Length: 172
Image (cartoon, rainbow, N blue to C red; front, side, top):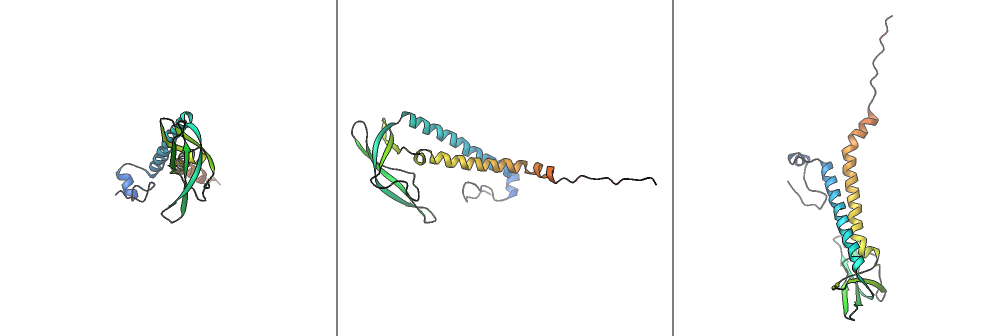
């Protein structure tokens, strides 16, 4: 029976793991591996974007408040810049933080594609690499948990095995 509590929980019971021929360790390792692959692909995309993007000076014109499910706010910057043709663009970032990383009126370095200036982002670590970093951390933790759970019985047995001492028989 599949359930939807989020990304980490896929099967409802140990019986379902066996039904599909899976072990919980393979689930953790699989999710971790997928996150690490996504990190690699996303990272290559960001590297390519940074290498071909043009630079422009921009200004933060607003901070958009987004409330999460638990009610805590994050603030995503909206910034304005001009491309090489002096056309002005206003872009709302999809990456926000709490407390806000930027303030209204702050000058920022903007990266944009000359072929599509609407594809622009502020040139800083969280705006460019925040997503890949989160996926890397999740992938590392899930992979480590899966590998650790796989090897745990062997490690546990190695350190907890009691040596069997046979009684000494004496011929008196």
